[in-house]
Length: 322
Image (cartoon, rainbow, N blue to C red; front, side):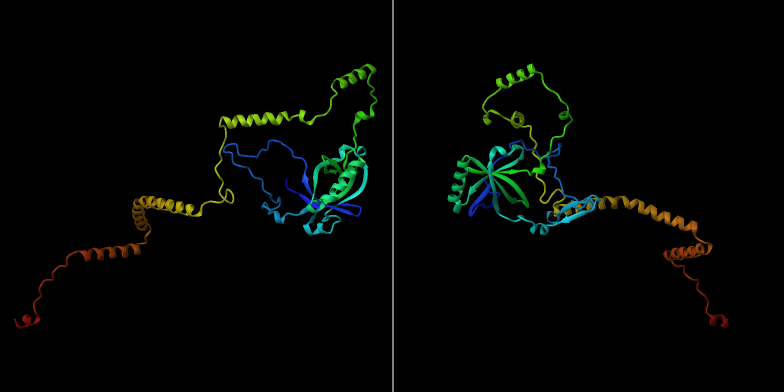
């Protein structure tokens, strides 16, 4: 077992160094919330209801809500100065008869084991309490809260039973308590006979959790029949994390395919688009632009035609001599 608290028992002038261990455990079939389709875990996140952002544990504080809706925020620093908040002492208040403590006050049980240097005073307190037949009512602090507890001996070990405060126990307030119903004498005798017939000594091992055992059998049967789901391992850091390099490569390949297909489709539409532009230009051109365009086309055409030879002309000197 792992110790969950350490401190000392203050018994008059005697101190007993001890460690606290959980004395009980709830045995139940534990379940996780999973996605029924693939068995993936369903996680819960701490989200601020105002901005919807996930809040880290370090940024979470305690809030006390006032009747008007305002909230008083308390941080770890605010709890440091509280009485007994950091004390490591189990202080004995009184030794009382055990039968005077109503079992409804008991909350949770812990074992106290002595530290290496506290075995002798531990045994002294244990044996003295066992001889007295009384239990010790003590105060101690754990998890930033002061608690009331009963210290008693069980199987030669000091056992700490945390207790509820008196104002934490509800008083029964039911309508039937006001009615005066008295059973008949014959009915009462018959009920007493039934109680006598079912009387026995209490043996905890005689009682079992039938529901848990039946549920375990169902799970074992499913495992034997291989009715199990093996969910894929989630990516490190959560479901939103992906392989960046793989994503980049996939994006490049997809872009190449898209660009190649686009170029093939764009060839024919491009020619049509050019023709359409020329046709539109002819329709919308002004007379001056049209004439200018015609002259330009004529010049372009003349450049491609072979040049005509000019006819030979007579010399002026010849004409004069004649």
